[in-house]
Length: 94
Image (cartoon, rainbow, N blue to C red; front, side, top):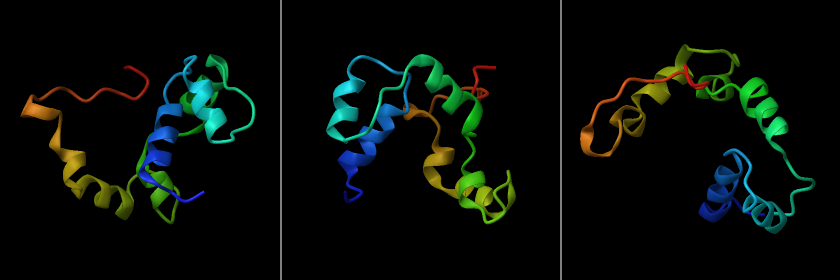
């Protein structure tokens, strides 16, 4: 399956907490099984860290050259639409 914008959007939707509508998306992508709230929390809350440098850097750690590249990317610095500033929140709601 080629990495089309539609595929990436569909996978992005499946990263959100599970909803009934996600079943049809997962089936369309031929993904096995179904994820429940506990599985989602385990995966996105404890297993996958929300820091790009861990996945993009050769070291697999926070910071470094990969983090600098991500921070320099304009969408990463742009903030919300309309320019309204808001404080950054920890990925787990803190």
